Image (tube, rainbow, N blue to C red; front, side):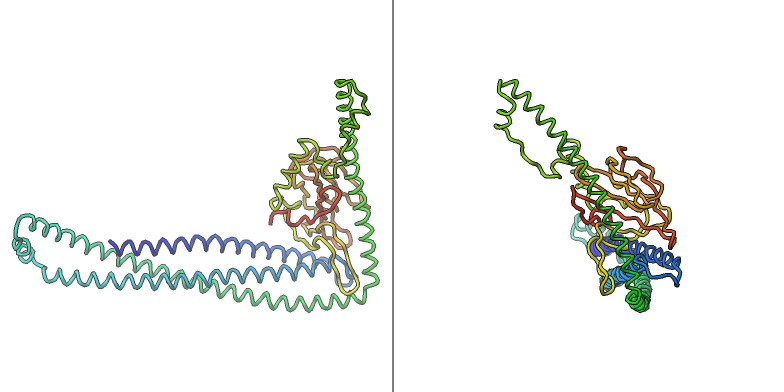
Length: 428
């Protein structure tokens, strides 16, 4: 029985490791498949741009993002290989333990067979029983012979089960080795592709230097668009702040009048005793219980908020970026390359405070208490100012750029009148 317990403990330990491995392996495989889709999406969008067209910021961002995604894929494959190597080591250790267990079982079974051979006929067994000193000893010897027979059958079954378990682990070991070899080949292929794309990127940067004047004109045009958008966002947010301050001031004056009437003092005297306290913009925006709850709910979903599009790849991150030698861009949000005419959705419950036409494309601004989300480069908006929207509600579609036939959505999050990096807020 102790051997059976030992075998079971080994199997249970191995299965526990296998479950953890399967979960981690599935997660890494899912990440790799997602990266493959993003890389393929960028490949297709880059192919839509003709080679004789002047270099654009979207092309440069797409090439840089493609390299970044391939590097992430190599990192994911490396993690998968490390996981499989640990699994192979675990397989080997389990097989060695099972083989040692099998050897002990075989030796015990061999001793049993020898004993059974020596007492193979009924006469010997009867003599063994009749040689007892008393009835109790005879009874114990009968029970012993019965238990011995059952134990021999159990040992035979344990040997068979252990042999099957070893065969299963050997098969799993071979499968893990094949998977490891496939991943190593995939990793090597990605490294070669990165080397080729780095060469292509180098040519692009050389072309960028030659076209820098025209490229800087494009950047200046983009910066003007960004500044116009930022002004529109700040104006809309400031309008909400001023409206909330106005409502708060009206409520404060009404409270002063009530207090003055109750105490028989003038409003000025009551106000002198309870001077107004200037609140920050974010405090004003979250001043009511409903706004405070909405702000807290939005903040509580940090890292779990859905993307504004179902499928997409970030081609330009938040902050300042230098392209080439002399070209610098500032991004107050993230730019997401997505499918043409993809539906753009609200990432959280809120109220539309602005739907603005920005030179042919639309920008939608939603308030969530003291937070604001901004969705730009939209065509055909389906919402209007003052409308209440729910998480996942469609706001419009991603506009298709007539110059290169691709779609990008620009997304921002503001806390009060300050833009913040939206990437950590979205589900990964």
